[in-house]
Image (cartoon, rainbow, N blue to C red):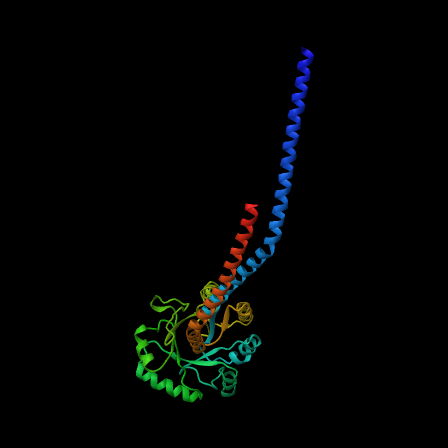
Amino acid sequence: MEQRRKVIIIVLVTFLASILFFLFWMEEQSAGEMKEQYEAMEKELRPLDLERRKLGRKLDDLNKQFVKKSQGMASLALVFTDLSEIIYTDIFPLMKDYGFVGVLVLSEESFLGQPDCLNQEQFKELMSSGWKCMLKWDKGADPKEWLISSGKLAREFEVARPKAVYFEQEAYDSEIDSFLIRQNFSVAVHHGEENQSLISLESDNSFRHLGAIGWRDSRVGEVLYDAVAQKGDLIFTVGSGSDLEKYKNEAYADMLEWIYTYCESGELMVTDPISVLEYRRGLEANRENLKKEYEEKESELKKQIEALDKEIDEITEKYVRS
């Protein structure tokens, strides 16, 4: 009896072992088949996935280009508040190396040919090299008298009357805007009076306000960084009227190198206030065409992505069903 029980146990163990072996074999077979199916599916999907990622990157790049082109870049004008001869002898060669131009403020206080001032030949060379002028508005000036003297000043300098007006510190008053607009001026330069921002983000491209800050002011790094980030417009002033404007050779050269890094990356242009105004007008006029072109390209890329997504879903479903 005992012997018979042992035989039965051996048979049962052998049977169970056979079943377990069969189950393990079936599992391995199933896993192998699943692995083969997965590898086949992956092989079929890989080129589609790569193409979809490529189209996704194109869509991202298209969006970045649209934002960049529609907003444009930031601008900086280097404005010289007096006509020191240093502008020609020291500053002009430095700026020329970077392809930068400056803006000279014309006033009754500075005359060509005065001691330590630019002479007529130097002034003309600057103008022929792309430099520009603007007129100075003194605090408390009578508008009518100022208009007459500014016309006379332009004739003495042998230039067309500039359309940009520079207000000395604390001289700007928004009430003068209407007078300037009636007289066909286009730009008023302030120093943050009436709580105006130094960075101009104005959308009005018929008459603009530009903020100015001395190039040696401790805030220039922060202000320029913000102007570049916001695609705004800004002015640095150089002159003898304030310690924050006074020219220092090495420091000024370092500043130009710093500014150039922004220009080199396509984030900033160094120009003059009227050119900035024309640049903003051009961006505004072209914005609708740019938007239409962007939307057409965006639509085409999205259609291609949708077609790939559909194909990917169909392939995935085919292998899931099998």
